[in-house]
Image: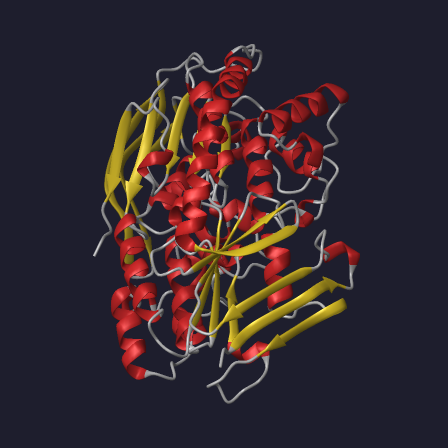
Length: 490
């Protein structure tokens, strides 16, 4: 007899603000492993909330059968790692420089305190070994890199031995070796009788082989459950048609970016960044050790390295977000750090987006105000932009395909739409130095192609300099001229 682990019959949420466009009927059977796929803003997170019973229903039904678990509650049997968990649990008191400011770490818990103990000791040892958790145990949670935070969240969820594990984009933020290890582990876990896996994916080439069925969500409508191979065949056909039809659109988009005037350019020096034997330590751990690095005007650098190797720390020095930078021999735009310039004089040349920034944005302002905050390098909007500046913000939102969302509150956007807004924020003042730390996190296939073309067009403009971090080689624009690989310090 078939066991219906999760069964939805004509289910519709009571609250219209979290309601999908049509009632949902879906049957997830014991032994099935599901991928939920769809474009940014399609309603995938709303559907997961329905699966987990987060909101009461207006009509229809939602039933569970968690056997052999002794508990019958969704709370105990379903564990959900959401997109924001990639960056840790932020609250309204978190600010994005906090990770770098040691004076703010006194009350921050250790990884060991938050991780807890597993029900299965053998599984715990396997997870700790796989994700190299042991060296992280005595680190404060706020000091973890975004990749390390992802590892922490995965291990914490798996240690509870859930009946159903739902993960939102589990592979983002992880370096290539760890992605491969995680894929192998999930494949191994998928063979366990008492565990079913549901992956929420934006990158459709990330559907692992252990997935048995795919459910697509588009325009807030949930499609039928398809076998994996049938879905992939249909997707490949649609993808090729989409790519061929986008070339002209993307070419016109790039022309618009390349044709921008250079009204705001006021820096003409040759050296944009210069680090002389820079070392950074937190407690007993060395992050960067005697690093020499010079970035010249017009260069485009790809920064790579394993999780925790110091990539984001390095960028925090360049952006003047790390207090330790003032004790280091660092020059930006030809001026030595600490020689009298203010942090705002530095930042007016820089456009920046990062996981830490995404984590810090918990203000429910209209999306256009989030974009406009980039004009003055603030998290909230403290200086009201004038009409000409708002027009520039709308122009960049249109470039990134989110102009129609300009009045939508930021926290009501999907994670991918939020990332697009933060990207527009980074570009809005036409910066001379563009710093992109994992810029394509959470973007669907179409938006990854679009944003990559925008970055390429921006980098082709005269004297623009870029530093970009990504764990996916395919995300790097063709304009990359230099590379820096950071090794994790022992």
